[in-house]
Length: 278
Image 1 (spheres, one colour):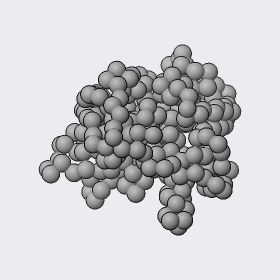
Image 2 (tube, one colour):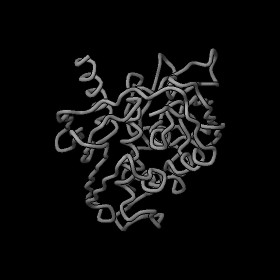
Image 3 (cartoon, rainbow, N blue to C red):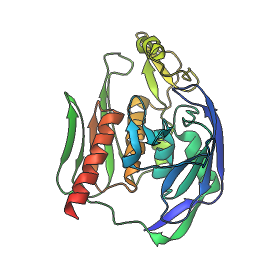
Protein backbone atom coordinates (compact mmCIF):
# COMPACT_ATOMS: atom_id res chain seq x y z
CA UNK A 1 0.00 0.00 0.00
CA UNK A 2 1.21 3.49 -0.86
CA UNK A 3 1.75 6.18 1.74
CA UNK A 4 -0.40 9.31 1.87
CA UNK A 5 -0.19 12.89 3.04
CA UNK A 6 -2.82 15.64 3.09
CA UNK A 7 -3.43 17.56 -0.12
CA UNK A 8 -3.47 21.02 1.50
CA UNK A 9 -2.90 22.83 4.77
CA UNK A 10 -5.28 22.36 7.72
CA UNK A 11 -5.54 25.03 10.40
CA UNK A 12 -7.33 24.98 13.77
CA UNK A 13 -7.15 26.94 17.02
CA UNK A 14 -8.48 26.18 20.47
CA UNK A 15 -7.85 25.71 24.17
CA UNK A 16 -5.83 22.87 25.67
CA UNK A 17 -7.68 20.55 28.04
CA UNK A 18 -5.11 20.62 30.81
CA UNK A 19 -3.24 23.93 30.56
CA UNK A 20 -6.23 26.00 29.45
CA UNK A 21 -4.04 27.92 27.00
CA UNK A 22 -5.15 28.73 23.44
CA UNK A 23 -2.89 27.39 20.69
CA UNK A 24 -2.88 27.39 16.91
CA UNK A 25 -2.15 24.27 14.86
CA UNK A 26 -1.20 24.04 11.19
CA UNK A 27 -1.03 20.58 9.61
CA UNK A 28 1.01 20.60 6.41
CA UNK A 29 1.78 18.01 3.74
CA UNK A 30 5.03 16.15 4.45
CA UNK A 31 7.46 14.18 2.35
CA UNK A 32 7.02 10.46 1.86
CA UNK A 33 8.70 8.48 4.61
CA UNK A 34 8.91 11.42 7.01
CA UNK A 35 6.08 10.19 9.22
CA UNK A 36 3.90 12.32 11.48
CA UNK A 37 5.79 14.88 13.56
CA UNK A 38 5.24 18.04 15.58
CA UNK A 39 7.14 21.31 15.27
CA UNK A 40 7.09 23.86 18.13
CA UNK A 41 7.02 27.04 16.06
CA UNK A 42 6.86 29.21 19.20
CA UNK A 43 10.36 28.17 20.27
CA UNK A 44 13.84 29.03 18.95
CA UNK A 45 15.24 26.64 16.34
CA UNK A 46 11.75 25.17 15.74
CA UNK A 47 12.33 21.90 17.67
CA UNK A 48 10.82 18.77 16.14
CA UNK A 49 9.12 16.04 18.16
CA UNK A 50 8.34 12.84 16.25
CA UNK A 51 4.98 11.17 16.84
CA UNK A 52 6.66 7.96 17.90
CA UNK A 53 6.45 5.68 20.93
CA UNK A 54 10.02 6.52 21.90
CA UNK A 55 9.04 10.19 22.35
CA UNK A 56 6.31 9.52 24.96
CA UNK A 57 7.34 11.00 28.31
CA UNK A 58 4.06 11.25 30.24
CA UNK A 59 0.68 9.51 30.25
CA UNK A 60 -1.30 11.19 33.04
CA UNK A 61 -4.86 11.65 31.68
CA UNK A 62 -3.40 12.26 28.20
CA UNK A 63 -0.42 11.28 26.09
CA UNK A 64 2.54 13.65 26.03
CA UNK A 65 5.49 13.60 23.65
CA UNK A 66 8.81 15.23 24.41
CA UNK A 67 12.38 15.76 23.35
CA UNK A 68 14.61 17.21 26.02
CA UNK A 69 12.75 20.05 27.72
CA UNK A 70 10.31 20.51 24.83
CA UNK A 71 6.94 18.75 24.97
CA UNK A 72 3.54 18.45 23.29
CA UNK A 73 0.61 17.29 25.43
CA UNK A 74 -2.75 15.66 24.60
CA UNK A 75 -1.71 14.47 21.15
CA UNK A 76 -3.98 11.42 21.03
CA UNK A 77 -7.11 12.85 19.37
CA UNK A 78 -5.25 14.54 16.52
CA UNK A 79 -3.03 11.51 15.96
CA UNK A 80 -6.06 9.20 16.00
CA UNK A 81 -7.63 11.33 13.26
CA UNK A 82 -4.49 11.21 11.13
CA UNK A 83 -3.96 7.49 11.64
CA UNK A 84 -7.64 6.59 11.29
CA UNK A 85 -7.95 8.62 8.07
CA UNK A 86 -4.81 7.10 6.54
CA UNK A 87 -2.45 10.08 6.75
CA UNK A 88 1.04 8.58 7.00
CA UNK A 89 3.09 11.75 6.68
CA UNK A 90 2.24 15.15 8.20
CA UNK A 91 4.10 18.16 9.57
CA UNK A 92 2.13 19.47 12.57
CA UNK A 93 3.14 23.00 13.51
CA UNK A 94 1.93 24.22 16.92
CA UNK A 95 2.62 27.44 18.84
CA UNK A 96 2.24 25.98 22.33
CA UNK A 97 2.66 22.91 24.50
CA UNK A 98 -0.80 21.31 24.18
CA UNK A 99 -2.95 20.33 21.22
CA UNK A 100 -6.35 22.09 21.31
CA UNK A 101 -9.18 19.93 22.66
CA UNK A 102 -11.73 21.51 20.27
CA UNK A 103 -15.06 19.73 20.95
CA UNK A 104 -13.43 16.90 22.89
CA UNK A 105 -13.43 14.45 20.00
CA UNK A 106 -11.51 13.94 16.74
CA UNK A 107 -14.43 15.06 14.58
CA UNK A 108 -13.10 18.53 13.70
CA UNK A 109 -9.81 16.99 12.61
CA UNK A 110 -11.40 14.26 10.48
CA UNK A 111 -13.76 16.76 8.82
CA UNK A 112 -10.78 18.96 7.98
CA UNK A 113 -8.81 16.02 6.57
CA UNK A 114 -11.78 14.91 4.46
CA UNK A 115 -12.24 18.45 3.18
CA UNK A 116 -8.69 18.84 1.85
CA UNK A 117 -8.30 15.19 0.79
CA UNK A 118 -5.24 12.95 0.57
CA UNK A 119 -2.40 12.63 -1.93
CA UNK A 120 -0.77 9.29 -2.73
CA UNK A 121 3.01 9.20 -2.42
CA UNK A 122 5.50 7.15 -4.39
CA UNK A 123 6.63 5.03 -1.48
CA UNK A 124 5.08 1.97 0.09
CA UNK A 125 4.30 1.62 3.77
CA UNK A 126 6.59 -0.73 5.69
CA UNK A 127 5.19 -4.22 5.97
CA UNK A 128 2.90 -4.15 9.00
CA UNK A 129 3.94 -6.19 11.99
CA UNK A 130 1.76 -9.27 12.33
CA UNK A 131 1.12 -10.24 15.95
CA UNK A 132 1.53 -14.02 16.08
CA UNK A 133 1.15 -14.62 19.82
CA UNK A 134 -0.80 -12.82 22.56
CA UNK A 135 0.84 -9.79 24.17
CA UNK A 136 -0.66 -8.70 27.50
CA UNK A 137 -0.23 -5.66 29.74
CA UNK A 138 -2.27 -5.44 32.94
CA UNK A 139 -2.67 -3.46 36.15
CA UNK A 140 -4.90 -5.25 38.66
CA UNK A 141 -8.12 -5.96 36.71
CA UNK A 142 -7.38 -3.41 33.96
CA UNK A 143 -5.61 -4.72 30.86
CA UNK A 144 -4.82 -4.19 27.20
CA UNK A 145 -3.61 -6.86 24.84
CA UNK A 146 -2.80 -7.63 21.23
CA UNK A 147 -4.10 -10.94 19.91
CA UNK A 148 -3.40 -12.71 16.61
CA UNK A 149 -6.10 -11.83 14.07
CA UNK A 150 -6.79 -11.81 10.35
CA UNK A 151 -7.32 -8.04 10.33
CA UNK A 152 -6.74 -5.08 12.62
CA UNK A 153 -9.52 -4.53 15.13
CA UNK A 154 -9.94 -2.49 18.32
CA UNK A 155 -12.31 -3.67 21.08
CA UNK A 156 -12.86 -1.94 24.39
CA UNK A 157 -14.90 -2.41 27.55
CA UNK A 158 -15.41 0.06 30.41
CA UNK A 159 -17.22 -0.38 33.70
CA UNK A 160 -18.33 2.55 35.88
CA UNK A 161 -20.44 2.57 39.02
CA UNK A 162 -22.29 5.65 37.73
CA UNK A 163 -25.44 4.21 36.16
CA UNK A 164 -25.49 6.61 33.20
CA UNK A 165 -22.24 5.03 32.00
CA UNK A 166 -22.27 1.57 33.56
CA UNK A 167 -20.74 -1.28 31.57
CA UNK A 168 -20.12 -0.55 27.89
CA UNK A 169 -18.50 -2.52 25.09
CA UNK A 170 -17.65 -1.61 21.51
CA UNK A 171 -15.58 -3.16 18.73
CA UNK A 172 -14.34 -1.39 15.61
CA UNK A 173 -12.32 -2.60 12.62
CA UNK A 174 -9.63 -0.47 11.01
CA UNK A 175 -11.30 -1.14 7.65
CA UNK A 176 -14.54 0.52 8.85
CA UNK A 177 -15.37 4.25 8.78
CA UNK A 178 -13.33 6.00 11.48
CA UNK A 179 -14.78 9.44 10.72
CA UNK A 180 -18.36 8.30 11.32
CA UNK A 181 -18.04 5.56 13.94
CA UNK A 182 -15.23 6.68 16.27
CA UNK A 183 -14.10 10.26 15.62
CA UNK A 184 -17.28 12.01 16.93
CA UNK A 185 -17.01 10.39 20.39
CA UNK A 186 -16.09 13.02 22.97
CA UNK A 187 -13.91 12.79 26.06
CA UNK A 188 -15.84 12.36 29.30
CA UNK A 189 -15.41 12.72 33.03
CA UNK A 190 -17.16 12.29 36.36
CA UNK A 191 -18.52 15.35 38.15
CA UNK A 192 -17.19 14.24 41.54
CA UNK A 193 -13.62 14.09 40.19
CA UNK A 194 -13.48 17.51 38.55
CA UNK A 195 -12.66 19.61 41.64
CA UNK A 196 -9.81 17.28 42.64
CA UNK A 197 -8.32 17.29 39.13
CA UNK A 198 -8.47 21.08 38.95
CA UNK A 199 -6.72 21.38 42.34
CA UNK A 200 -3.88 19.22 41.01
CA UNK A 201 -3.44 21.57 38.03
CA UNK A 202 -5.27 19.46 35.45
CA UNK A 203 -8.25 20.08 33.13
CA UNK A 204 -7.92 23.87 33.36
CA UNK A 205 -9.44 24.13 29.88
CA UNK A 206 -12.23 21.60 30.39
CA UNK A 207 -15.85 22.73 30.06
CA UNK A 208 -19.30 21.45 29.16
CA UNK A 209 -18.53 22.56 25.60
CA UNK A 210 -15.59 20.21 25.12
CA UNK A 211 -16.26 17.24 27.42
CA UNK A 212 -19.17 15.08 28.52
CA UNK A 213 -19.66 15.32 32.28
CA UNK A 214 -21.57 12.68 34.22
CA UNK A 215 -22.94 13.02 37.75
CA UNK A 216 -24.93 10.70 39.99
CA UNK A 217 -28.12 11.96 38.36
CA UNK A 218 -26.92 11.44 34.79
CA UNK A 219 -25.28 13.52 32.08
CA UNK A 220 -24.99 17.27 32.69
CA UNK A 221 -24.75 18.10 28.97
CA UNK A 222 -26.76 15.67 26.87
CA UNK A 223 -27.54 14.51 24.25
CA UNK A 224 -24.88 11.90 23.53
CA UNK A 225 -23.75 11.36 19.95
CA UNK A 226 -23.86 7.58 20.47
CA UNK A 227 -25.59 5.50 23.12
CA UNK A 228 -22.14 4.20 24.09
CA UNK A 229 -20.15 7.36 23.34
CA UNK A 230 -17.77 6.94 26.34
CA UNK A 231 -16.42 3.56 25.26
CA UNK A 232 -16.12 4.71 21.65
CA UNK A 233 -13.97 7.57 22.92
CA UNK A 234 -11.73 5.05 24.66
CA UNK A 235 -11.23 3.35 21.28
CA UNK A 236 -10.36 6.77 19.86
CA UNK A 237 -7.69 7.17 22.54
CA UNK A 238 -6.34 3.67 21.88
CA UNK A 239 -6.13 4.33 18.13
CA UNK A 240 -4.28 7.58 18.78
CA UNK A 241 -1.81 5.98 21.18
CA UNK A 242 -1.11 2.98 18.93
CA UNK A 243 -0.65 5.28 15.92
CA UNK A 244 2.68 6.11 17.56
CA UNK A 245 3.90 2.76 16.19
CA UNK A 246 3.87 4.38 12.73
CA UNK A 247 1.61 1.76 11.17
CA UNK A 248 -1.03 -0.31 12.93
CA UNK A 249 0.02 -3.92 13.46
CA UNK A 250 -2.23 -6.70 12.24
CA UNK A 251 -3.84 -7.73 15.52
CA UNK A 252 -7.00 -7.61 17.57
CA UNK A 253 -6.38 -5.01 20.27
CA UNK A 254 -8.55 -5.74 23.28
CA UNK A 255 -8.78 -3.46 26.33
CA UNK A 256 -10.67 -3.40 29.61
CA UNK A 257 -10.68 -0.36 31.92
CA UNK A 258 -7.32 0.59 30.45
CA UNK A 259 -5.50 3.94 30.31
CA UNK A 260 -3.00 5.88 28.23
CA UNK A 261 -0.30 4.38 30.41
CA UNK A 262 -1.34 0.81 29.59
CA UNK A 263 -1.82 1.66 25.89
CA UNK A 264 1.74 2.98 25.67
CA UNK A 265 3.16 0.04 27.62
CA UNK A 266 1.59 -2.27 25.03
CA UNK A 267 3.01 -0.23 22.15
CA UNK A 268 6.47 -0.40 23.73
CA UNK A 269 6.17 -4.16 24.21
CA UNK A 270 5.18 -4.61 20.58
CA UNK A 271 8.26 -2.65 19.49
CA UNK A 272 10.50 -4.66 21.82
CA UNK A 273 9.26 -7.94 20.37
CA UNK A 274 9.66 -6.62 16.83
CA UNK A 275 13.28 -5.62 17.49
CA UNK A 276 14.08 -8.94 19.16
CA UNK A 277 12.92 -10.85 16.07
CA UNK A 278 15.00 -8.83 13.59
